[in-house]
Image (cartoon, rainbow, N blue to C red; front, side, top):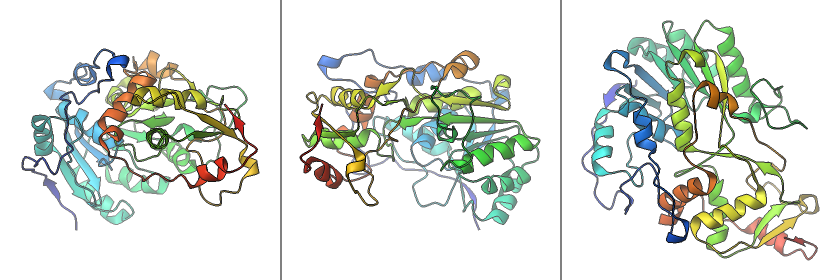
Length: 381
């Protein structure tokens, strides 16, 4: 059985927390050659503060990795009562790089935990109905069947906010993707698409967020980390085909702000929003942006034809080899959302608060690079 508990934490020791020369949790500084004004992400988020009368009892499905880490902090700062539903395998409160001891202690004293497995549908129904929640943020839902027991348990739910994916769109010759574009029922994200359909079919106030590629500190997907590993090792960066494929990245802190923007917002009722950065970038441009953000020299880029290689089950490049980007005009006009990070600034924030401190999720693996570099017939940038 799971129980709802307040997670209290003692002041962490220096050995337990990543050291930090930065007191600003909202952003990181670039080197002198890359100076930019300090981001006021936290301060700007504070302008969204709600009155005590609108304080909500909020459940986050997940919340101990990446998106949830930043979202839960914003919600707590807004004065909401926030509970994380997890299996309890990861600490419910962990100090973030650059986060002050005072801010962390305040967060850790307020966050709540409901331990359980969301695949245990009977437990989900009984525990959620017993607690009662006003709003659900579903950060880690993948299948519609996982959402049904939550909706059944909370008949008076005010809003269900779902983290979907721009990966649900059908490949098009006319990018960018808009929220009204055709979707792909065979997408590997079809579970998220089916969840959106379920929400539309139920008598519930819902909002769905479709991020493109997400990056930022503590990213568990090898997005910017893939480039940083190669740059640090002084290795060439192998990029498939021409390298002019256009893609799009959005900073995790901007995504967290978008999740706050839709909370209790009538304009967001039963709406879908693409969320990502303002501008698009080519694969080659992303490699150069990562180098600039981390203070590395201009990278050597090697282009290759993936059809000439057999990589087995290994993935030689972290992005889909195609144009993939979406319009964020709807979020900007309807929600008033304005990303706080441009790409180089955001990558610098990620590097300085994570990889630059020697922390990363996956060890470097250059085995597919070596296969590519070992072949004589390659096109050099």
